[in-house]
Image 1 (cartoon, rainbow, N blue to C red):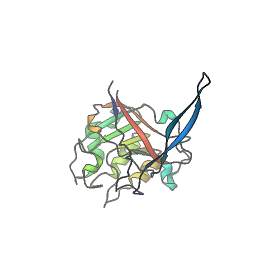
Image 2 (image 1 turned 60 degrees about the vertical axis):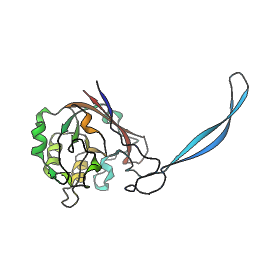
Image 3 (image 1 turned 180 degrees about the vertical axis):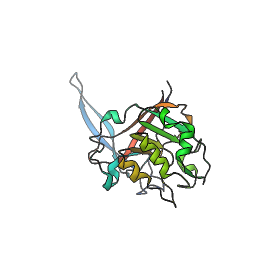
Image 4 (image 1 turned 135 degrees about the horizontal axis):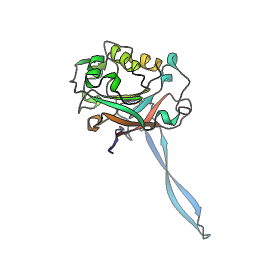
Length: 222
């Protein structure tokens, strides 16, 4: 079994595409007193971290409630662990060029017919060896019929390096969320996952009321 950590790290200084553009990790040093079991006292200095970043920092997950109109009541504190831990799924590898437009249902079905998909998760590596930010933003995207194909496949978890169009909106997120499908954005190194069957883990902090937040994305070749 090969294990792939595909999580984009949150940098100590947020990148320009992120908001707000300021340090995401601040450190302070505090002096502590501790008692040894033997009864003596020791002192040392410990680092304490304060975190400040928005919900789309690094690799992150959206639950349907990210859009108010599709909120199904699930947030990071109540979603069941089995919905996000080692979910059986399929990875589909394409190799789309910068600016090449829609990824259609026919494109996905040509890689794997819908009846041959594994489990409830789907991973789309549309860009081959390129990362999501290796193309002009939103110049490769999921078509509305590709989303309908996924809904028909009854998946519950989608990981993809492309989503919505920049100038030809396809209603991608509203349609996915209305079907109860959670989405993981900004993965990296998808091309290194062999597949086609995989196990997907996308675990965020168990944070009350959060419907979008960073997560750790792990794929296993199944």
